[in-house]
Image (tube, rainbow, N blue to C red; front, side, top):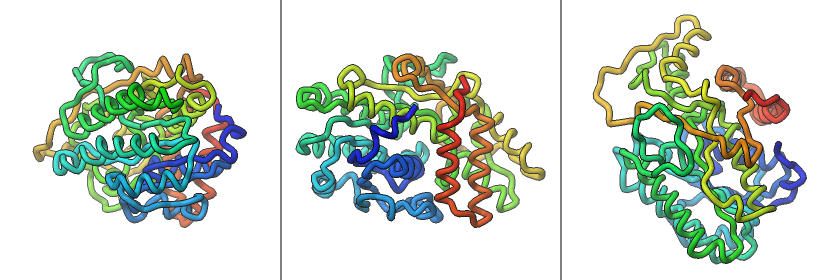
Length: 355
């Protein structure tokens, strides 16, 4: 699956390493033996994964700075002299994008442009993976999964900002980076769950907060359908894709979906009721307050990643849920979370494909 020998000693520049997905990816890369240079804002929540797994001690460098600061970003990449760049830094929340659209576009679009400008002036970079989102597609509320060649678009500022980032990725690849021997791809993942996520307006963290407070979980759109998956699923895809970009090159420099099996694309209500079954006394109810628009149905077609990368989901949704809850319980019990998180990564790597 993941070639540990490829990553051993590899110089990797990772943006967003203090976040939820970035933290899991940074830990995995350091365990593989990569030299990871992180660039991100301070951890967005307290508690947070970055601190709990002691990431700062494992990294070659950790720069706490803003992706919108083009000068600081260029200096950090120049100092790191990476071979591979993985771009995860983002404003990742749909509802926050309604409240802060200017920040969302500045971070998700211009932050990406800043990154590509820095890459252009850094000899030695051979592969770049820009992580966007499953929400970058023009959502037509149909029942079919979206493929990589579907039109880009969106309703809310977050979705549109990520669609713009996809277009910027294609423009830099075609205009500058392909000719310079830098192979650039984008990656679109589903709705990720996993331990160490305390973000607001995400279903699992909101459920755990409501459970701890002894209150019912308020659910905005119980019938909304989403492609749920454990955080390790797309991260494995990013690593495989980066390896292919580095070793083979331009044949893989395009957009890629990393979504769950069709049967794990489920309504919010299905997920909430599965969680409530695990905790006697847990309950939920519809949130009666008005909310901004969010897509009703979203599915991803990952046939290309299966066929050409050999990537496919390993954990079914029920197992992903249990792994998330196991992580949370271990944290509550005061366990060594570095060891526990690495054990979950190992369990994932050594498990069989689910589909």
